[in-house]
Length: 117
Image (cartoon, rainbow, N blue to C red):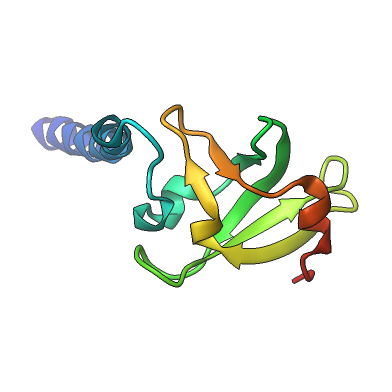
């Protein structure tokens, strides 16, 4: 019984540490967060917005480990996944605002011009 309680306590602490690391990073910067330093798990399955706050894509995967030269795989277009296409671009093209939104400085039309994966 004691082991189960300690195991649950440890799992809760690890989950809380992951959630607070992102929150602390946002609070420390006060502005745009450097997404190249975030793990793929923190970025995966997040919506991506243009500068007008319109959702233009979904970040589905991030290649590499935190640091430079990472790629973001974005799913764009389509309705409910039908007709959507995936494009890849450098992760540095994305910014994270203090509220957690991923922002890309491209329009939906510019994303359509990127080569398909």
